[in-house]
Structures are given as structure tokens and as C-alpha cells.
Image (cartoon, rainbow, N blue to C red; front, side):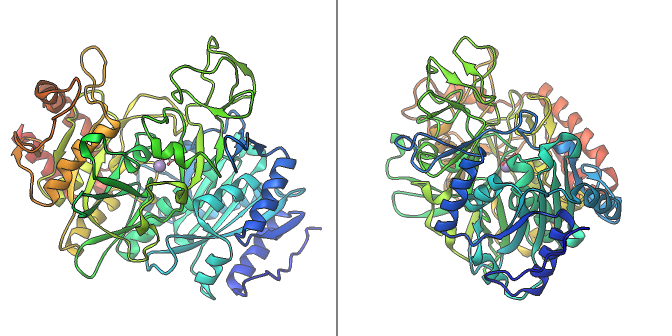
Length: 592
Ligand code: OXD
Ligand code: MN
């Protein structure tokens, strides 16, 4: 006989919350229910429990104070896009780029999977805020999970606990998220979104992107649905603040597909050439943006931590990230040194002589497989970041002057160009493409169209989403300027042309100057490109005007192929494609 659960939560009297938790508990049948309050005492207790249960390993506390290690099942290491569903009454609302399922059928299937699925486990009730307290953009979610790893990670990634229920009061408007681990069994793995109910059910996984439900599920997939309904934008974008030596602050967002360097760009350290400049991070992955009373677009970062890719991160590529993850961080699937320090490919030039790899096997530099998984991760609080922008807690958000799109492209795409206007910018974002990375299960290095870097994260019909972007222009009287960048172009010998990382400051500086009407530009077929005077190459080692010309080259044959490749997406979206984008394509062809 299934148990009936009667709740008397310690800090909320919200009837809708209590009823929902009781219903989900009656379904999943946990042995115990714990309401998380977000306190330091709770963190200590739950961390000790996680260590005792072998879910977390305590790392070397002298080298990495407050840091812990988690190893996932080898077949549960990245987002499972083929198991991710948008469940809307009409299939057309999910659109051709999402996997669709009828809500009734999906609820039926997942309720059957979850029935008794938490027997022998504790159900943790995790209320959380997406966004700073007091912001009109901020929203409340509740995640019910039987994973301590999720609870401790949600504590980093969101403002978690009592604070969220205080924000919610007696309102019924909260995201309902159920996560049932089900032994991380791929056969029982579903990440199912129910936009009409603002609900998500995730089963059979314990990988961050699938189970930290505030992040991709709520802040992007369901967030994008709510954003269209309510007249704002939920985007896969970093937010950074650039302060000039004279104290002028400009805020920009940038959308790059997963594992293409958003975290690095958001934490950029200007090279010595830019002494006096300060780049600060508002967010590294997600931006919620809304028009303000002054006609500008204002952005908040709904998260409070970074869930970043470890490989390639080092003191040169991202010193702020290295500082951020030096304490109070949860590492997943990196390699371990004999004294319980962490290592990953690219952390140091020479690998240590001996390691334990992410699967727990002895590893030496002669081993065939990488020591850390290519999508191994860190979860660290944003307050650890020495360059965290003070505006992260500003309920008004920050006014955005530029939106940058970028992908990982070995050919075709110049280092930087600027859209002629908003509609052209939406076309550039819509046709964004990138070589795939290890952030999702599947082949790595294949070119895919990834409109606005939202292909895996748009919670509704992609054609309707692009139309929403076009319509937003009418609500924003001072629109951000739109740019496209590509740090990853290669020469004939396969070497990156542009040095990247800190030197990206030069590109950012041109973008900032353009937004303030200070830098010259030439009209190219693609858009505005740096003019002869205002793109600063001075003091660069091994990079001169000839290299810049190579980085900026517009090769007609490449572009002919590129525009034909847009058709893949345009055909897929045909029935819903806004006509403006077809016109933009025609204009581009006519300019080339
Ligand atoms: C992420 C992703 O984890 O985009 O941020 O996959
Ligand atoms: Mn991301």
C-alpha cells in the first residue's frame, strides 16, 4: 500500500507548494523528506552525508579548501539531446527542431517510471530563485530530487532554500521540477518539459545539464516559452561588464554554443596593453533580458554559479576561473593526483606522472585515453570570482549595448563583423553555426546550425522564437548593436589565425567603440568590418595587418556554400520562418 505523505514544512505555508510536494512524494515513495533551507549548517551536514555515502570525495583541503569530487557513471557525462522532449498539446508549438511528445502520454510514461522510484532514498525539496531577490525578472523554482549531488550543486548554481519561498509567498507561480535518478539508467532517461504547466520531469540521469533543473530546463527551455508569453528574452548568453580607464561601463552579452568559450570570454583578463581596463562577469551562460522604461534592453543573470568545462582551463587561458575554482567547488569527472588534487588536459603543459582517470583507473602520460572527460566540469559560486561584477545582485539588471554571436568555425567566418541593423542581426543569430563539442552526447567536430546558440535550449517552435526576436525590436527603442565573432578560424596548415583569450580584448574594444559611435568601419557584403584606423594591433606578437586580412577574409566560394547550407535550416523551419529572414538572405546574396 503506497504511503500517504502529510507535510508540515519548516518555513512555508504555501498551499500549492505543500500539495505538490505531497503528491510527488506519494508518487515516488521516498523513505524520508528533507526541506532544504540553504543554510551553512545544512551545507556542512549534507556534504558530510555525501562523503559518507561515497557520492563526493573530499579533495586535498590544503590545496583546494572546501572542494569535493564527484565521478558520474561513464554513460551519463553530457546532455542527452535525443532524450530531451518538449511536451505541448500541439506538436507545432514544439516545432521541427525539438523532440515532441503529447503531455498526457509523457506524464503517463514518466509517472509510471517514477512510481516508487525513490524507495530507499531521501527526497530533497529544493526551492530556488532564478535571479537576484527583488527583480521583476526573477522567478521561483522547486526541484524535488533524490540526488545529494544535485542538492549541493543547486546550492552553488542558484539562490537556494528559504529565500525562494519567501519570494514566492502564497503564489502558485513556480516551476515544478521533479528529478528521479533511477540509477542514472540510460533506458529510463528522459528530460521532459511541459511548458503549458511550467513543469519539468527528469529521470535516469545525474548529469548537471540534465538534472540541475534551474539551468537549461527552467532558465532556457521553459524560460524561453515564458519569455515569449510575457514579452522578454531568455537566452544562452554570457553577460560582461567592460569598464574603461576613464570609468565608462558598457555591458554586452554574447551567445556562443556550448563549450565554445563563454566562460573564458566572460572572465577575460585584458592584456598589459589594456592596462586600466576592467572586465567583470555578470553571467557566463544565461541572460534574461527585458526592455526597460528608457527603451534599452536590461539583462540579469538568473544563476549564481558557474558550471564550466574544465579541460583547457589554466592560469593563462582563464586566470579568473582558476581563482574561482580554487575553493568551495564541486568537480565532476576530472582526473585526480595521488595527493587528491585535480587535473585535466590543458591544466598544465606537462601532465603529472601519475593520475587516477575520470573512470577511476590508474593513468600515466602514456595512456591512450584522456585522463579527464572532455566534458568534465566544475561548479563554483560566482562570488568566488575575483572579477564578479557587483551588478549581479542589482534587481534592475544591466543595460545591454551589444549582443555578440559566435561559433567555432575553422573556415568562412571572419574574426568580427557588425550587423547593419537589428533584423540583419537576427538573421546572423538565426544562421549561427558551430562545430559540435563534447557538451552533448554525440559526434564532436561536426558543423551544425545552432540558431542563437539555442538549438538544444529553445523550448518552443524555433520559427516562432525567431519571430519573437524580430517583434521585440518594436519594444526596444535603443536596440543593442549586434556583432558576429569567430575566434577559431584556421590557416592552411590548420593553425588558429587569431591568438584568442586575452587578445579577444582587441575585438571587444572595437565592438565597444562601435556601440559608442567611436570606431571606423567599412561596409562589407557581410556587414560592417573594422576600418583601417580603429582596430588596434599594436604590440601584438606574431600578428600583423596581413594576418588580420587573413582573419577577416571573405571568400566567395566559402560564402556560396555557407548560404546554401542555410537552406538546411530554412527548409526545416519553412512553415514558420519569418519572411524577414528570407529577405535578409536575398540581400546577402545580392551583396556578395
Ligand atoms: C552548458 C551547456 O552546460 O551549454 O552550459 O551545455
Ligand atoms: Mn551553456
